[in-house]
Image (spheres, one colour):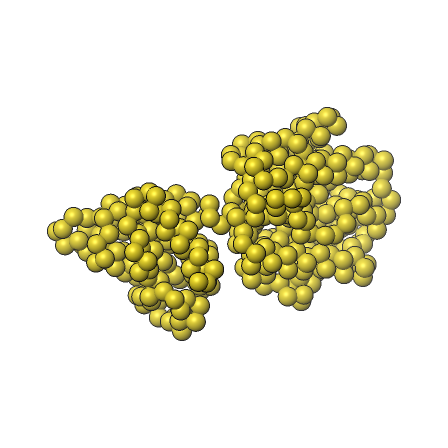
Length: 367
């Protein structure tokens, strides 16, 4: 059985537990997770009896035959409607759908398709499965972890090469550094950057999600780099903060505090750990250092086919960690008008110590 087929069986068990005859999966990344399909139009009708149907349009007939060889293929430009009609023809009484992805208008259209397909007979009931597939995706298998390892390795190497070549120096702009970092990741095998690379120099480093602009790097600046690479659809995420030229005492003090908090957060990653408690392990260190109000976001998040996915690790999070979850730990201290420090790693929760995937040193680097 392929990994995609194993994943479909896990979703089938969830559907059975909820009394569903079928599930209509329309979120494209969830379709990829369950089938391996990487095109831009695809949906999956997962049936309780195992007679699943994958739907796409004529552009992807050949691709679907290669990537989804073990699922019946339906070629229909109106893909979701076609699969809904298949569900009715198969006698489904209760059909699960992804309510977080289907729009109000889309739900109305789906309901009309079911009415028409039933042709006067009993119309199937639509039942939200909420984020059932995303819950499955939160725990990674070894194939996924290996993709994450390779994505992190690309990012690690890209930063190391730029630093070694002197690309992180006064006089260059944030935009120049960001574009060169992106280009280097692509040259090293990334499909794309994981997200819009953050390069934030000087006072801009106090803005958690600053967008790079024409600001020039200057001696004495904190330089915050938040970036990642995508490999086989899986994203890495890493932040390193360094100093250009000479590091002032306050910069060293803030960096040391964030490094201590980040180490505490990493150490708290354990099977069964409550995500709020993991956040608190790091946040309490920053609060004790007098900067509680300067740590303005959650400690971390899941990472995989999306750069932000379950679980969320923060004061408002819910649930606990499980072996195989890939998460970030990224505390920060941001001093408006002066500068900020964030240190972030991607790790995998295991039965033992968490596996660190982003291997770039976290010692304060002064270039």
